[in-house]
Length: 592
Ligand code: GTP
Image (cartoon, rainbow, N blue to C red; front, top):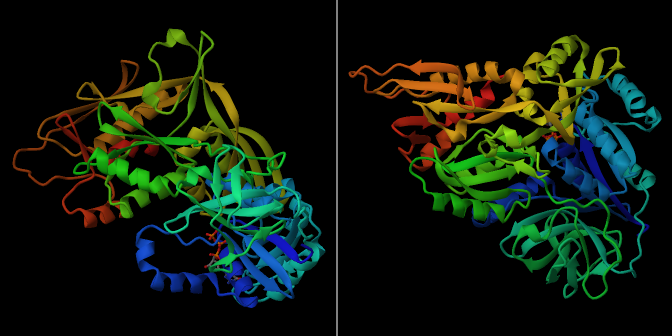
């Protein structure tokens, strides 16, 4: 164990994590990730078509007689729980900062996650080859913002191969070897999983105590389910079989497990015959934060959508789904996601890899209704909010703590934006003379509404942000109902703060007027609280000689893909006599 080192690379998006990982692999003689991907593309075409994703989650390499395990961490706020579990598998982390950008929101968020796990942190300033690099400014930030010693910083260029040997040496010298008892009962932390058609669901683990080998009867702590191990090994970076994995090591375990849901990230694997007393602390089941309705678009069936979702879910333990019926859209599913990016990934893969056309309703957070009789109901779909307000004590919505890092010239407009979005300011700090860090408490629902686009456009792309869930808070919320030709369209309803109801209702009907194609008859679009109409628009009929249909909105990339697959089938939903395009269902997101 003295000669093992387990580490991650943590960084803001685009600061060079993958490039550095490649260099480390090249330097230590393993094949590079990109080479490997290319090789696999050539040889495993069919498997890829069947949905194997090539994931390099934990690569083993050797340097100066030491075994180094590099554990990958996902790079997006949706997956922050997964990041914390990956870090829990390590003793150290390389904190990578772009020499031209300096510290950004995710650098800080990931730094604190690493500190929580007591990791040794090796600060590295990357991209020093660029003319705009200012390593001394970044070194100061690292000292002042993160409280690390500036003398420990390594200057590097992952692209040019500068500083790579120094980083490898620092990993060996500064990061302590893992502790653990190879003779104690097995205790292995799952930090990732994937589905492999040959091996079944595969768990990536860090073994803390004991050992595991083919034939071992393992047990999952959270469920008590048992399986017999068929194979253990590590990515070198190819999947390579070993005789066993022991305390301190990182690798994979396969045990003919049919469903990735049986090996959840954060859970602990132990020996069924000789179980450990307690699991690795910190497990929690994946908690979907954002829900949307997924329905088959015109030309696809509910059964096709169900099959696609079932197949997809084999590989994604974080997704949640249950059938629902919408008066407007028919039979479909209410699907829970970790966040908006996760939702986009799922939508795209369902359409591209599983060939099903989708209508997606606007994503919504999970609201909590407290009733006067003491019961509490979680609302995953705005249409579930009871109309009978007499029964309701209060409605609560999820809040997040947002950290924003921005050049100082954009501070004013970003503060305005946060205020508009019902943010409560919690912090304001100069990180250096040009950079400010802001902290706000904000409803998660406001982040779903174009926060990302707004902040990027206000700051010309220079501001970055990160957020974490802090809890539920009571707010004055109402449901806006939408009516088309006097019929309520449940799939368009949404929950909004009372103060914003009028503005959003107005913007929504205007948006719908633009997105709903003109019909041969007049269409009336209205929004109201309960049955009380507060905004209304009319879409005039087409004149009889106009036959071309005119669909509003952009032709999205997804739409193009879809059209390639199934010629002539449109992402439309017939509603009564009115055709609603996909854009109409997302109009809710386009209002502020
Ligand atoms: P995500 O995968 O999006 O999280 O990004 P990442 O952090 O893995 O960054 P990646 O390695 O993909 O690098 C982002 C960009 O920066 C790429 O265009 C790289 O070629 C470039 N890059 C990475 N390291 C260096 C460097 O040392 N110098 C220069 N000039 N460019 C670099």
